[in-house]
Image (cartoon, rainbow, N blue to C red):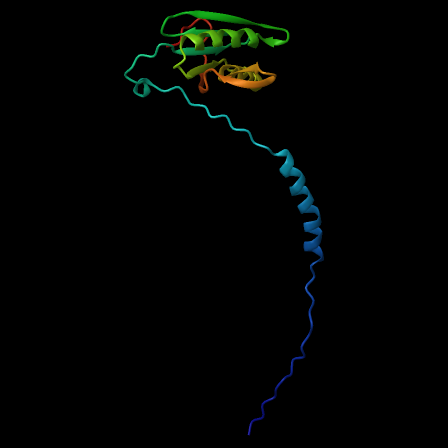
Length: 168
């Protein structure tokens, strides 16, 4: 008869070493909590200018283009052909005068809500956002409180034509 030898394995109590994992959590959790405060995202909805197929059948009363150049902001109405230029001083573009002019245009054409902003290639992002904010809404004080009056909230962004060329 064969004898079977049974080897008894002794049960060994093995502890899991969680020290490395705990060190990781001690560093990672505060880091993620701190970064969550600083990573806030703002979104502005914009559209790209459409081609002829995107144009509707009805003729608009105002086709507003704001051309942002290095030294000025030019407001052009493609329907009437009128233009208005606002210069740039040492402190920046004349956004107050631009806002007043856009408010006059909005009073004449209250149904129009879209505008196209065309930029030269080297315009700073901060300048684009400042012009977009000016075109979208005008802050007005009423009864001691400031509120935004809507001007042209539907903004399309594109590339400006060269200074000597006319855009189509």
